[in-house]
Amino acid sequence: MRNRPLGFALALAIVLSMSPALFAQSKKPTEAAASASEKASFDPHDLSGVWMQDHPRLITVDARYWVYKFTMEEPPMSEWGEKQFKAAKTSFGPHAYPLAETNDPVYHTCDPLGFPRIYLYPLPLQIVQTPTEVIMLFEYDSLRHHIFTDGRKHDESLGPLWMGDAIGHWEGDTFVADTTNFNDKTWLDRMGHPHSDALHVVERIRRVDREHLVDDMTIDDPKAYTKLWTAHQIFALQPKWTIAESFCEDEQSFESIDESGAAPAKK
Amino acid sequence: MRKCLIGLAMAVFISVGFSRSASAQTKQASQPPAVASSSSDSFDPHDLSGVWMQDRPRLGRVIERYWIYELTLEEPPMTAWGLAQYKAAKSSFGTHSFPIAETNDPIYHSCSPTGFPRAFFHAFPIQIVQSPAEVIVLFEWDSLRHQIFTDGRAHDTALGPLWMGDSIGHWEGNTLVADTVNFNEKTWLDRIGHPHSDALHVIEHIRRVDRDHLEDEITIDDPKAYTKPWTGKIVFALKPKWTLSEEFCEDIGSFENIEQQETSPAK
View 1 (cartoon, helix red, strand yellow):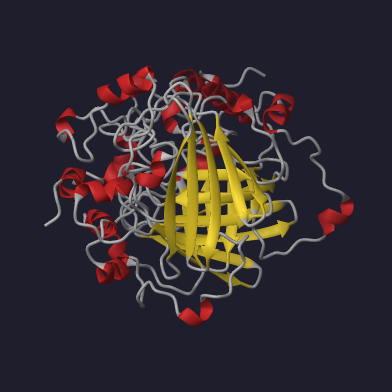
View 2: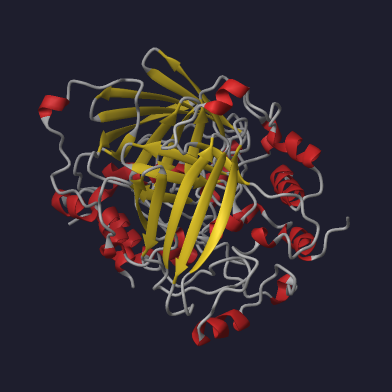
């Protein structure tokens, strides 16, 4: 009955860098290395596949910032932004609150996480492409990010959205995705960094080689931050993986996972 | 702020069959949904990709609008256990609906995942995307995903009971046969409260009958809830100008009004 939360707990425990062997078992990347000939050839405009954040095994909670925030450095918050951040009681990171005290908007309700926070869940994402869209399917909570590439403009009439309204175009081999039209019900990350409904996210996504995707993301939100700031994400292709079902509702065992995420690693 | 809700209200209103021109507007179609007849004859029957919407005639009586809350007009053959579950279900839909305050519909008040195949009965479009190894059905409603693996794998029972089930598929001629098992028992089969157990097995025969139409013949096999397998058919029409938008359960504060419209007799 509870196999799934166990799987989730496992995945999380693993990305928190305890055991690559277990990880391999859970996701079945039996032959991690592709043959040399496969490696050499890739289409830089083909972003499709299953991707996972690519981070070295790090032992301090600060070094594992990537499971709860976008940059190690504190972003330059406005007065309003600072106030929001101070009011946020995250259950993550070096100064975590116990779950009972957190005011994280996704706890207790399983509300949609929103974009770009969804990137910070250490579960894979799958990219599929159609002639008019690049679609990111996130394993976590079945969320998705449709980026329209058919030349349309942002559609203001859609109303404030949890995942925003995204359009994209290619500049050479770089895919530039522009997302606006957010509601202000979500946190920007799992730490509680704020955003307003003026949030504008620009991503420059590039398949740097066959197995790696780089996403240089700019956060522009003049209400919450005094200037633009940038995050750099790297994803590794997982050719043998598929994304599974990981709904927020199945995470009754989240509490213990969070505690292990917030506490320093043992080794 | 609440434009999204208006959009939703409109979409539901429309799918109930009131206004085709309004439909085109909501979904940003610059032309009517109908496709030019010249292109109607050419299509690849193994290409299911595109945005599809249930295709139903405009009907006046609530019983004829069964397709927004159940799979067939006929009552499926329930076991004693199934019937007991069904009688305990207080649906806010259909001919004998309960007021929202009294419903025990599992998705109300909590917005927990709608599950499969119930996701088909929420009157929003779906988008199908295909990769060499998968056919993925994306539901506009609640960002749900029905991922059918076509790479020859067997069901993976290690995944634990799932809300959307575990799906594999193969082609028999021009028909995609999708087989879904491994469900949890937390969802209703449809919106009217027909039950299913964790023994539910759903077999779909999906066929693109012409360029603009897709048929999904769905067989429900659940020996705990039903005395024999039973079948219903959903017909979808291609919507070449539509794209999926965001429709999270959490945004539907005004759901009550919409439901009342749907459940009360049409004028």
